[in-house]
Every structure is written in C-alpha cells, then in structure tokens.
Amino acid sequence: MNQNVESNLEIGKSFEEQFSNVIRFEAFGGEIEAVDITPPNLKSETPVLIAPGYGETPATFKPLLQTLYHEGRRAVAISHPRFGGSAEQFEDKLVEKHGLEELRKAMNLLALLNNRSVDKADVMAMSEGAINASIAAELEPEKFRNIILIGPAGLVGGDNYFDLFKRFTGTIASETVDLLSPKASYSENRFTTLFESWAYFLKNPVRGLIECNAIAKADILEMLRATRAHGIKTAVVIGVDDPVFDQSTMNSVVHEAGEIVDGFVTVTGGHYGIANEPKYAEAVEALLTSLEAKK
View 1: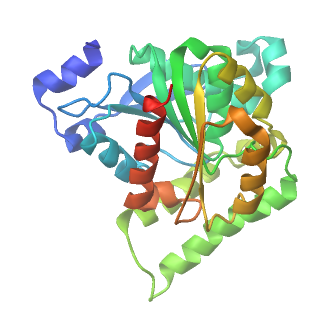
View 2: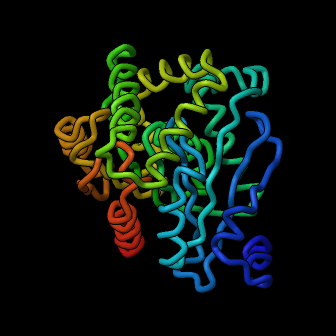
C-alpha cells in the first residue's frame, strides 16, 4: 500500500483532518498546494486526480472530494500556483506544441502524482483542466487509466478568444450578482467557487489573460486519439445549462469523435455544477465506475 495512504489510515484521520492538511512542494510552476484524501475503505486502489478548471482549487471541489471519500475513492487535488514556471524549464518542442501555460499545468499534475507516489491515476478534469490533463496523459500515458472530461475546454477545437472570455467572465459575473441577490439560494460552496475564481485571476491578471488565450486556442482531440491508443479510456460530462461550453456543440463533437470517447453523460447543472451540485458529483463517480468495468 502507498506510504501516503498508510499514513492517513494509520492515524485514523477524518475527512476534515485530511482536507485541512495542505501539502506544499516545489515543482515546475512554483510552489504547489494540494490535498491527498484517503477513505477508510478503498473501493479502488487507483486514486482520482482532480485537474481543476480555471480558478478552481481544492476548496472549490470540497463537495466532490467528500463524495469520492464516501464512495471509497482516494483523491488528490491541486491548486496551481500563480507565479513561476518560465519557458526555460521545458523543452522548446513541448512549449511550441502545447503552449507554456497549459504545459506548465500539465507538468504540475505529473509532479503531484510523483510527490504522492501515485503510479497510475484516474482523472476528473474540469473545464480548462481537460487541456492540461490531456497533455499530461500524452506525455506520460503509463500514469493514467481513465479520464473523465467535465465541461471540457479544448474539445470543440479552436475558440474565439473574445467570445470565450465573454462567456466565462459573464458566467462568473452572473453567478456573483445572483448570489448577492436577496432571493439567492445560498450555499457555502457556491460562494467559495466564486471567491476562488476571482482571487485566482486577481493574483496575476496578466497571466490570467494569457491563460484565457491558451484555452481558446486549444484542441485536445488529437491528444485523446493518442492516449486512446495507449488504452486510456475517456468519457465526457456536460451540464445541460452550461453557458461556457454549449451542450449541443459538445453532442456533435462527441458523436464525430466516435471510438475516442467511451462514455458521454449530460447532467442537470451549469458550468460549476460539479463543484456545487452533489448529484452531479455522484453521476461523475458512477461514470468512473462504469469505465472501470468496461473492457
């Protein structure tokens, strides 16, 4: 059994104790903060790596982490640093192919797996996380088993920078205004999701704009073809009310992708549904279970 898993189990740490134990280490992108949470009874020996979307952190995904914990799945989640990680740290051909911003985050994901002694992982990749998780899987396919792309960026090919920026910031602004309304259906994590997004951008606005451009230009289909050739299964989840990545467009892309995609599920919820809706998280975990059973 993995030493990090044994540490959590031997001490008998609760979910809250493990969640509050922030792990910090240096990697390509600067200082990484992460959490590693192990349930008392494991459903699978393969941990789940959570690849966050833009502005998302372990705090954003606390409800998802709780769902995975109760379902018996170990999970590791990362908060990408906002400073550090220059192009000189990477091979020129990799920077040229993937772009610095997404390559940096892909290398952070791989660094987290190495730091936590994870030999192979299942991935739940949200929004932008679909891009850097796909890069990571293409670079080191032996470390991945299944990838679930949730409201994924990069799946529909190149996007218009200004349209994407408008849709994304419009979603955050709309959520913020709605949450401040006296009639808002308040939830603690809904507030956390918005706070983390704003804080992430404001820490380094210049990098934030560059990242948005990288997201708009990304196309992950060829990477998914490459990872499928290595036996990595991929599934896609989209919220029916997602204003950032339209459901009908996703339907068409997944249909055209054919055998590259092993599963496709639509669920009730918007772009942040995985963070705020427990049923959304439960549906994603059930999808992972079905991928595990698929030969």
